[in-house]
Length: 290
Image 1 (cartoon, rainbow, N blue to C red):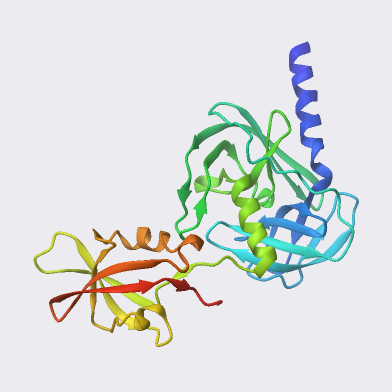
Image 2: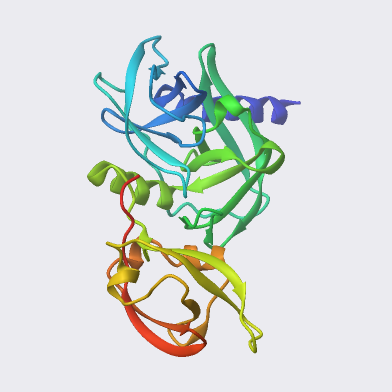
């Protein structure tokens, strides 16, 4: 009984460690949690908010402060907000926190009524992966707990009190963690330019079956007149069949290659025009702001 009581007290202390820097966010289109990343800047999940219209950050001291969007990146689910008011101390994110399957972790959030906390274990820990929208996530981390939707955008904290990432909703409301390294990288880009650069071919592509080939190709269905594809000499009706000497991947994998590091890189594209092979060299551009 004594050990359980001490564990309970330790968990409560752990939940309180960063509670003052975790905020509740409410806007016209949604509600979630967030946390102080730097003075006057809050990080939260991108998905709950379609707009920052009417968005307010509710702090632990009872203040409700208007917040405005600095930038967002749907591919990593990271959004950055600014408030023109004093903020609690920023949360030190720990990108080097070692995590193993089975370790205890807390998901911390806040509602208008007070702090949220849920305990679970690290259910999965693995190498980096790509989101369905092509974002580079530096590590796979999943917690074995059901995340309250109002806690999305809050903190994931280990048993040592280290904040190792931001919690977002995964399948069946299980908590996925956007790791600290990803949050830091993306938030810094959003602060500098309001968005994350993405590679751009300037081509509308449609998967097609190419006669005489096992691999599928991509029909060029449209061409941006000012884009890299047109500059490389590609035209509507061409069929792309190779990328740097290799068969083209599936469309999702192809889009994943157009990450921020791809901008400015030259690639060799194998194409068919009227059934005749040709090769073009294309310099990947930066996707225009939407």
